[in-house]
Length: 98
Image (cartoon, rainbow, N blue to C red):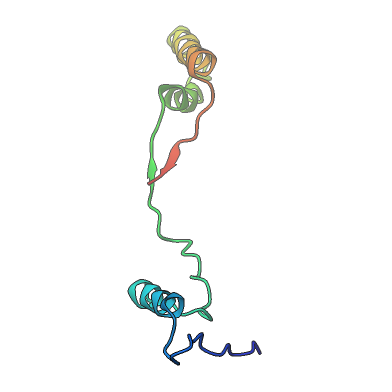
């Protein structure tokens, strides 16, 4: 348990300006010298989904696996757009915290 400090006084017996300044600061901030630090708030942020074009076409490429000319052309287009997005912009998260 910390030792309580004696109030600082000058020769007249009145408190010094330093102590009254500290008390005024504590009153405005709502803290005391022995107050515990504020607890972290882990759920105060909001996440939103931000899909990039390469993520959309990567998902669409799974539906182009059939042995049909239209499916093969669609697979080439979707994988081409996916490759261009990764090459030009790099992999980026689809969740943004605000």
